[in-house]
Each structure stands twice: as structure tokens, then as C-alpha cells.
Amino acid sequence: MHRTHYADQIDAQIIGQSVKIAGWVHRRRDHGGIIFLDIRDRTGLVQVVVEPSTKDLFEQADHLRPEYVVALAGLVQKRPPGMVNPELRSGEVEILPNSLEILAEAKVPPFSVSDGETVDELLRMKYRYIDLRRQPLFKNFELRDRVIWSIREYFHKHHFIDVETPQLARSTPEGARDFLVPSRVQPGSFYALPQSPQIFKQLLMVAGFDRYYQIAKVFRDEDLRADRQPEFTQVDVEMAFVDQEDVLRSMEAMVVQVFHEAMGIALAPFPRLTWDQALERYGSDKPDLCAGEPLVNVSPIAQSKKLPVLGSSEMVAGVVLRRLSPSRKVLDELVAEAKELGAGGLVWMVRGQDGLRTNLKALGESGLELLAKAAALAQGDALLLVAGDKARTLAVAGQLRLAAARKFGQMESGWRFLWVTDFPLFEWSEDEQRITSAHHPFTMPKIDNWQQLAEDPLSLRSQAYDLVLNGVELASGSVRIHRPDWQRQVFMVLGLEPSEIEQKFGFMLDAFQYGAPPHAGIAFGIDRLIMLMAGAKSLREVIAFPKTARGIDPLMDAPSQVDAKQLRDLGLRLDGPAL
Image (tube, rainbow, N blue to C red; front, side, top):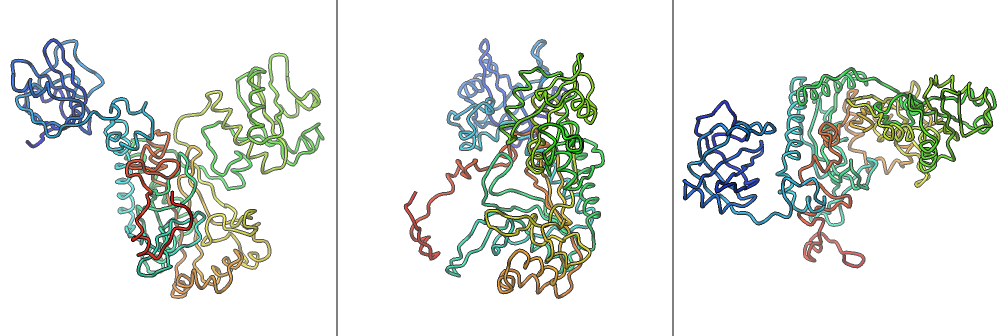
């Protein structure tokens, strides 16, 4: 029996026509001797009515249970008055069958498909093939398909070439731990699963490919959370003969097209902030613009007027709450929350009908008015002040801004994109007691004289950029170093010896000697993008077969132990007790 229609094609337009459908029994109901079947396929539900007069069909239908797989043929007819279901596309009609075939019986599933969201997530992941039958979850993957199609369409239209790069490569410093793969034919040697195709795509620019992209699977052995998985998908892009502006303009156009084609949404132009501006205004390098206005810097006033408590601090940053008139109880809760975030305390003030009230009386009326004026406080507005060293104060104030917006229901809806540029080139690692790359070691610095690299490396900014959406980093990229002498200098600042540079990156530096064009690139986290577009709470809702927060696949019970012969073939021996 060949299907002629999906469920979402069964509607009032085809009343009187014969159709053939196939799917799963979603629900079976007996009403007054008549059996009602809800048949489900990937597009939705359609109601089938089996009457006792069709004896053989009725006996078959009576045998059906939830999740049996069936195919049936019948006549589309209008539902009786009062039985229309406006929530279904097929809600005005039903099918009166003339044949029914049971294609597969099913055990009672561990949870109902219709109740999947209320089921323990570990159970859902163990029986993921049942969980994926849920319509809301399936719609996430329809969205994912539309997004990837639109991405490919954009790149094809703009002359990019899709190139697959190796999944087995050598370990290189990318910022996270590698997943290592032992080589059987080269005992004692290991491949690494790629954290990104970074080096390969740069070599493709040397090869003259000019514009490359790839929907790439990448791997990082790092601690997991709601927006992180050990393996994930990214859109990887590299362009030759371009600068930072070219990349930002091109990728913004791609995102605009994706939202328009996949969701019918028109996006406004993306604003831009430097890394320093983002920290000063929002206390974060991935600020959520939905959480209201930026932080207020009242340090100059506090310091110049030598205000009590605040005047001796390096930074005094404020969060403004508009038209809320928070109670003392709520303000005390915010003080406690600020302390949990790492602040020594929190100074608050509220402008009411009777003037300003505060928990720091020592500021006096004049001090309060100066601070209130700096924050443009109107009646009903409140100001939350955090003080201390600059880095910590901005970080705490930034988190408090988000917490307050959520607490008072003031998070704006919509899609607030932001480019963040000019990141630090290097950072100091307390754990390793050395300079490390803030992005990766192939990032071009913003300098006119390369001598600055040796003189004060930690002060340098890079030609690196991130795309942020509603407080989530979606993409990260940079202009690359394309000259071998410049790249060697960066490696040396990172503490690599000449022999180590040659061992790890000699092939790349050698390639650059054969004519490497200026080039730049970026990589988008597809899973994060789909998660946000779908309104999902976790990456696990947009990845077909995800891992748990402990990196476990409950469906296949992976990772798992392997037998002794496999270890011997790889020249490996377990050091320590077996699990």
C-alpha cells in the first residue's frame, strides 16, 4: 500500500476523495460501539472512524494499541457538527476506512508520546527514537533543516565552495582538551578529533580556494552544560583577500537571509561594540540586549566627590530599574543576590514621592542627588550600585542587571544581535602561569609595529570578533596571520620553543612560504542557533541523539569498555582499576 497523503494534507479541500495514509496509532477510543483512531505521522494527526458494520475492519481496529504501525485506505468525509477540532489542520474531516493493514505491533512504550515533556530526561534519551516522535520535538528538526538549507543556498549564491576536511588530524592548541584516537598502524601515536577545521581551512586559502564553507562536525572534551555538547555542528567559513569588515558584512547578510527564509522574520541591522565597550556598558563580552538599558558608570562622581564607601573604589557601576518602586523586602533580596554573585555588598536607592530613600544613609542628601542625577532617576526608579575593583565590579553588575530583568519580568522579546570586536589578543593563565591566546594563536593582532608584540603583548587587541544573540555567543572568528615570520613571533610570545614550533606547525609555516593571501574566517554554532530560534531550553532538544551532562549516551550506553584484544591491537593498557 503506497501512501497518497500525509496527515497535514487531509483537509476539507479533499472531502469525498479516497486516500491512503500510513503512520502510528497515537490514540484509540471506543465510543458507543464506534472506534476512533488518531493516526500520527511526522506532519500531524488525522482521525479515522471505524464502524461495527465493517466487521473485519472493526476487529482489526479493536486489536490496535498505541504506537502500532498501520497503513489504511479510505474516504475523506466531513466530521459531524460539534466534533470539529480547530487545533488540527485535519480537524474538519475524518477518514472512513475500507482497508487497514497492521505493519508492525508495538510494546507498551515507557512513556506516552503525548506526555513526553513531563518525562524524566534520562528516560527520554534512553528511548530517544520514541521521544523524537513528539510533534514539538520533530518541529525543531524541521526548523534545523530549513536553516541549513538556507545557509547552503546563501553560500552557493555567493560563490563559496563546500569542502570536507579530515576528522582524524593531529592535536593542536585550540583552547579545549582533544578527543584522542590511538593509531593501530602507528603504535604509540594518536590522532585528534578536530576541535575545528581551523588549520585545514587556512591551508585551503593558500591553495587558492578563495571562499570555503563546511557544515562541520567538531569535538571538544570539556565540561558540559545546557548549551554545550562534546560533539556539535558548526558552519565553518574562510575567505581570502578580505578584511574584518568584509566578513562581518557577509555573515550578517547570511543570518538575515536565514531568519527571513526559515522563520519569516526581518532582522534589523546588527549594532557593534568593542570588547572594552561591551564590558563597560554591560559587564559581559556577550551581553544580552534584551535585559534593558546599559550599566551606569558613576565612578567619576563617587571619586571626585569622595562619597562615603563608594569614593575609594576603583569602579562604581549601577543597574537602573525603571518605574518599579521595589519594596524593601525585594531590595533586600537583591542585596543577598549581589553577595552571592561575588559583591561585598549592594547600595540601593529609590526615588519615591517623598524623595530618595537608600540603605546607605552616609551618602547624605547631596550625594544621593548626585548619583540619582547621573542615572536620570525619575519617580519610581531605583538604582543598584556595586563597587570594588573594576573587573569584578563590572562582572557582578552585569549579572545583577540580568537577574533584575528576569526577577521583574522586564526581559524584552525579540532577536537582539550584536557584533563584539577588538578582543584581547592574549590573556594571562594563572593555572599555567604563562601567556595564552584569548582566541587562538592564528589571530591577527591590531598593531602597526610588530615590535609591540614583544614589548607589551597583554595590552594588544586582536582582529577577532563574535556574534552574540540574546546573550549567547553564536559565532566567533578573526582575521588570520598569513605571514610565516609574524606567526612565528606569536608562537614565541606564547612560550613555544623553535623546535616545538617546527614540530607542531612546521607544515603550516612551510605552506605560508608559498604565497598565502590575507584571509579571515568565522564559525557559527548551528546547534546554539537552532536552540534559540526554536525557543528550546537545551541543545539536547535540537540534536537528534545527544549526550547527557556527563557525556553519556543512554541509548547506546556509550562510552563503553572495550575488550582486551582491541587494546592490545592498539598497543594500549589500562592504568588503574577497571570501571
